Length: 268
Image (cartoon, rainbow, N blue to C red):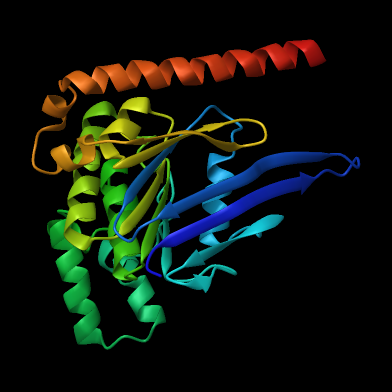
């Protein structure tokens, strides 16, 4: 079966004092190959925990995951990760960073050079390929991180708040780039974000998670990502359904935050 399947996934963290925290409970989700999923929810709802389990960095307490019919049991090149901070090798050039994965696979130099040059063209960094990473702006560094991830040709790209540290204008440009890459590569993408607008713009599917334990509270299927591939994202935001969905989800998350604060005050 093509795609990612998450079946009754639960995660409990045991504490040194003998207690435990149930971070996720019975999360079930099926993603077809090529779908773009954005994940929203209040702090502490398990968004990043879920992403780290899919990446193979954590082993779930219960449940299972399969990708293209085989069980996920740990990190693998078929799943690529893009972090909030690029996690790049600062002592390497842009070209060397993007080519790191192919180098580890002992790919022939000519083939590696072709892949790297193509990806640098795609993300608009061909003129900066010999620059050191520390010489680049935050937005450019995230472009390098995206290109480096794509150089490994993963089936699934996992993105943990990849645009959260960028200024508003750069963030909007990067959102357009993410949509372009999604459409051109056909990759499955899971994007974690705290921005409701970003989740609406980039999520062909969107799930809102509730705490604690973390679980899927509501799912949406949205037209905005498809619209945003060929349109100015500012125009997409003018779509009459965009503001309706934004207010609905903001209210939903606000109510969850209020409930969390109420629990905290009761336990104080």
